[in-house]
View 1 (cartoon, rainbow, N blue to C red):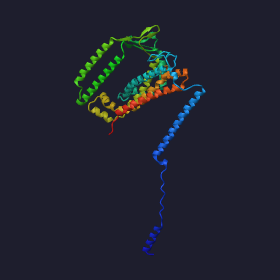
View 2: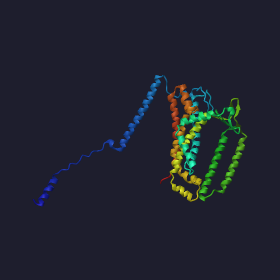
View 3: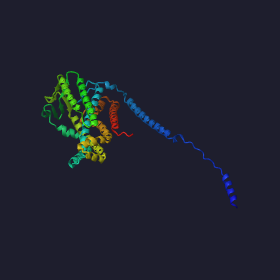
View 4: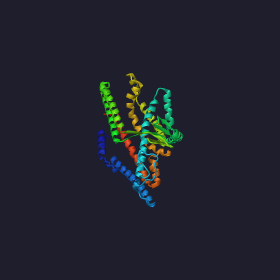
Length: 409
């Protein structure tokens, strides 16, 4: 067989083969990523809605079975019980809505004080942990280790029962220049009152703080451009001090002080902070400062060592390096975990119920529930308060965190 015949036969066999095209299968509806994601979200939403409906339906059925109804009309009913300490006027003839406001304000004051003082102490302890002095760094380390490994509730009870409850009686109170008095009932402080509207004093304080901030900002901008503070800043500062002194002198003629004085078995006049507030404040501040100290230490150690060396090279002292180089860069890493510490400080205030401090859980979620039986409504209000405060605080700190982060273009 010749080569030409072989080639001819091969071409014929190849031509006789028919290639059957594979049927094109169009993708199914659920094979698309967008459709599948929408389907999964719809199922998830349906499950959540069904769960919520079941919970509310079950609660409504139980209320009907007990002959009760859901509503917040009880907030306008007279409470009929006393509260040991409140920032706003309160007496038993007021309503449960007033009780709720008292609990909210007491909780906010305690949380705000813990956040401010705890952040300051935590920052100092965190910096101390990075000290080259082994005694200082080890003291800070043991402070953090001991405090963080003891539950907060135990610390609150310890400070209340071992420290504040063992203070002397009112007649043997510790006094500070006969203006402030500390005993086992609490701390008594002088208060100021004005015969005219207090808004004038608030307005002057706001104007004084705002003007000082504007002067400081203007001086900082000039120093950034020229390398030194303008001489006019010191003249403006002297004028500001004189203006503040004159304003105080003018307001002092309408200002009067109420000094605590011992009458009988207790003090009268001035302001009063109960021992339960002091114990909760000290315990929560110490506990939260230890967590913040670790946050500050981690943030400081995240800065490259070259920044330290560069600052020392150009002649910066340790304090200048810390204030001008390290802290401005470390704050970008500190703010996110710091947010969690602040949120935890707000929610930890509910543990003060263990020592009788009249915060929201104590006066509203315990006493009010026992008297009204409106557990669902009261618990919902308490949960809503903590959710709103947490979301608001998270929003503000996240906005600040966005401002201090590096802008990548």
